[in-house]
Image (tube, rainbow, N blue to C red; front, side, top):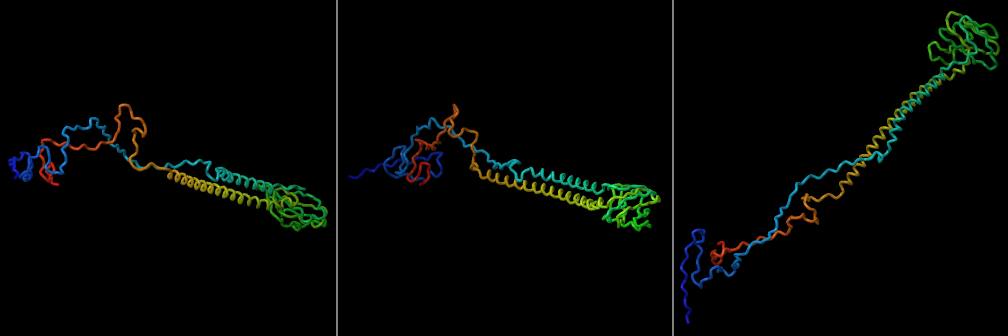
Length: 331
């Protein structure tokens, strides 16, 4: 029995708003009529529910807050306690006090030696020009006595008579073995050594041509005067200069070593601070609630963002021809 051929449907007019390429889509020549709303292509998707509604309780959209990025805060310079520095601060006192104490000590020693060197000798005889003085010489006192003058008096106005006979001129007046002078211009000074080669009685006569005072005293009382003056000057210069140099060196060395120690401690502590854990780079947590904190009353609950819902198909849309999608594109 032969199959009956079904009449083909009449050609449809293209829609007025259909795209131009829709007129070129071929229409099926034969075959049973397909129900409206179905696709002719066997792999076409099933029609979606045109009455499907959106989620009635869509979550509140939460935008991710981006906070500005700030440069890392520099590590502050640590404050070093002065008690931690070495050497201790007392070395400033040691160096500072060495200078005045050393200088004062040198000055006192110099003054004491100066006063001792210029101290007046003990005279056994003292007279003015135009007079004379007699004194006794013991055994072994050769070169023991000296002639001291004060003011304008001098040795050339005197003569010394010995036990052996009178003296003539300056025959018995020798040059002084050392020098001595007082602290003032008119103070006593040593001018000659009296020659006393034998024991006995001696007489010293001085004229009044030159005004002044004459005196007889032992030479040993003023023998160390010159040495004392030299020693005093050396002590003043050497001890004073040494104290100043030592004090300055102690101050400078203490300052440099304490500064170096302070810089080393600052570097060590800044290195320790820089090695501490730093916050990870990226957006930092803002002023919002911390993780685990309860949300404020009335605030929407955060939840996962739902996936986009597939768009519902219009039931009045025309089915796509074979090999095409509903939007007219070819697979």
